[in-house]
Amino acid sequence: MENGINTSIVSNVLGSASAGILARVATHPLDTAKARLQSLNGVSYKGPVDVLRSTFRYEGVRGLYRGFGTVIIGGTPGTIIYLCSYDIFKDKISSSAFNKNNEENFVVHFMAGILAETVACLIYVPVDVIKERLQTQYKTDTIKYNGGWDALVKISKTEGLSGIYKGYGATLASYGPFSAFYFVFYEQFKSWSKNYIQQKEEKNNDSTISTAADNTMTATTTTLPLSYTILCSASAGAIASFLTSPLDMVKLRLQVQRGAAHQLSSMNTNTPSYRGMSDALAYAWRTGGIAGLFKGAGARVLHFVPLTTVTMTSYEACRIFFHQKLL
Image (tube, rainbow, N blue to C red; front, side):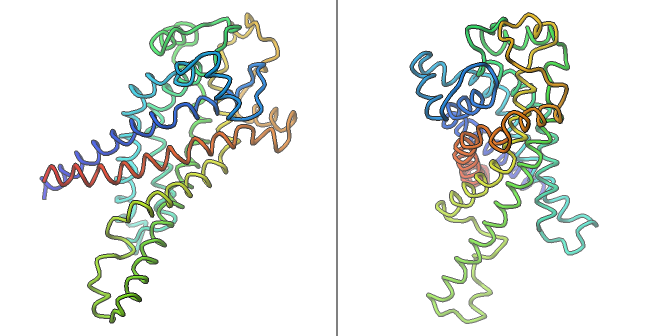
């Protein structure tokens, strides 16, 4: 039993690590486009495609993958903690006294998603701060970062620990609801898909009640076919990322905001300074209305759909692969 638990933990860790790396390689340019669209840096873009084209033209592939090293080094442990924590919290909440029926449901998935994000943000936030500063810096910036480590050192010296964890509350307010909504929709779509497949197989085979009871495809067991996993993850990612786009925009603007001393010396005097999350939201609404709140939403969806799809598909597949190899 203990060996089985250890095997499951190791396979989950290896699966989540593989998923995190594959997903970031595939989607980082879209994340760069999202960051540049959402930040207020005096540069105007027509949309995500324009950002990608302009960045590649003037900065090459290196510009598209700015901050990528930081994401891989710091983000991979974050992904491991995030996905493994979700499974752990989901199991604990499902079997707790709080859940009398010991069944997975909306509340279980919602709470597990938020709790997993709360833990993972201890790593995600510093990674995001460094990554987004690198992604949004331009030649006119007073502070120039020559990579992730240089950014970490300079931010630590000039802004302290608060600079490294700038926007932690906004990140939780953004990614907490995202994770909650994502896993609620993802698990629900998976359940519907499994029920659909089961009913389809029973109908095709003209199954009796007794044979249906022996069918391996149920609402809570058996891995879905790859095409269904992709569809479930992509749909959940699109819905969750769009709904939480205003919160993500605020998070980014708070995180790329320099320390007070460096704001005074900034060459870009048009960049506003925010006192907090509510102030940033109010500014976005005041200056752009609904469109201002959802600025960069398209790029966010374009980024998160492949990110969540590759992450969850790879995680499910790699977890099964490593589990079989370790048995």
